[in-house]
Image (cartoon, rainbow, N blue to C red; front, side, top):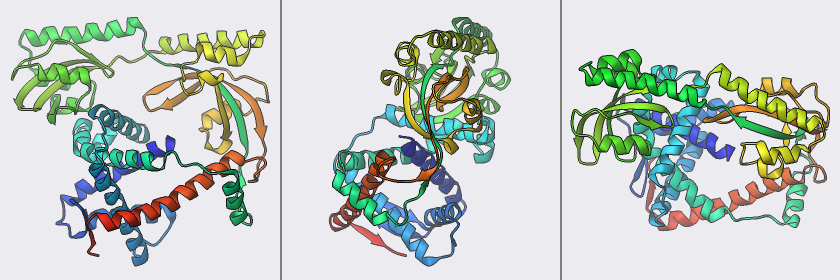
Length: 425
């Protein structure tokens, strides 16, 4: 799952940057696959990005042809996904889009910084890349359907190890961990304060205040500098609550308060054309306070005291943890490479020995799920050369990826026989 998330974030950056670049030059088409085209700017950008990441020469023509082959393969998979009627819902695309944007904001620090880099509000960025994200998800879903059930036998794993026996890598130091996680969320009091603030703004608008001026002064998202203007958007572009309210308005009408996962919105419908709307909004976020976080840390300290007094960590994790991926396993998150942990996380557990539990530490599960956790160090595993005795699961995963890649290559050759394509490079 983490690999897929990183893949979607990378693709989002590639696609959007290409869109901006393509506005500046008239592209030459270097390949056509079914109804999709691959432009020279798209190819050059992907070559440059791959070369920088892997310290290669971006002018290498062999590398350019290799990257073009990969892009053609991507388009072939997309064409087959459409042919097979693979479905991705608007809600799934919206969730993926939101997750990618949140990761961008986390990488660059603030939403404003992202908007400065791309020269447009976040909501417009989403609309610009939405169709490409959907295409990527269709391709991924077809690949999951075709290869997701592939397994490797113990014999295949042993064969894989024999092939690599002279080049098996070193495995850095690892720790085996369990956690009890509680997410940070605003209290009811905080939520009511945000609602009251939004209501005051709505009252002012009803008395004749200018919507754009109010948005510039008080809205708490990137569209504020544009007077809250979100531009044109088709149905399916917004979260459900916002969309239902927007499409229920008449031209020029202002909504009542609309609560979504982002906070409280006041929406103005500028104009509607069929299944597309041009809206403005004012957003008042429901932001957690230091007191909200203190209450979570106090709860975790209380849970930690119960465990130190004799209760089992696993039982407390099943009862109290809010991490759905680990709570049913007693908080077990398995082996983790020490050098893949954040600096703060490493520091928090660096002095702990096997069987010891940390104090509450900040933890981010996903871009939208943050909170605090107490961590149990169950075991430490020193650095060692990968071997089938100690690293069977890791080798199993690598052998599976190898097998899937070989099957994928054969599949692409089959698709090339049934789907029209042309390499013009």
